[in-house]
Image (cartoon, rainbow, N blue to C red; front, side, top):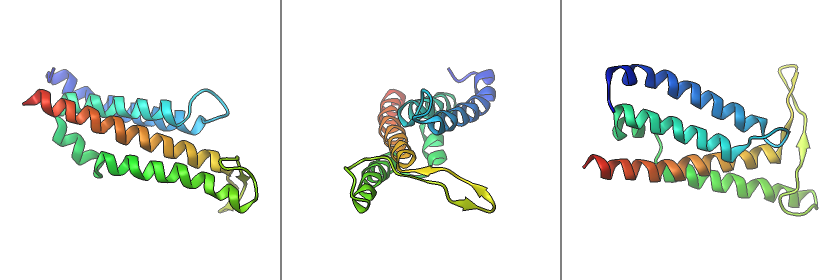
Length: 139
């Protein structure tokens, strides 16, 4: 399915889907969404790119090996829970802070870092599977 129309529209579709995946990730625990659903949307974006242009283009676009992305996400998700030990609360308890950066108050929490870790695990793991399946299909 590498038609001219699809190859022309694929970069726009991919960019919009990646933007949507980050939006869903940042909605997190306040509304429906979070790392898992955001990661699935990002994987779908990479799949569209892979169908349109092939696996080598996707591998160059993500720059890092997908399993390295998944491993770093797993490490981030695990470390987000370790911070709670420093405050003498149970593992994976949510901790919030509101630092001021350049005069703007930014809400930061361990829940956000856990969601980002889950996002990276889903993106890395499922992208690795999808790319290996697509490589087998291509020959």
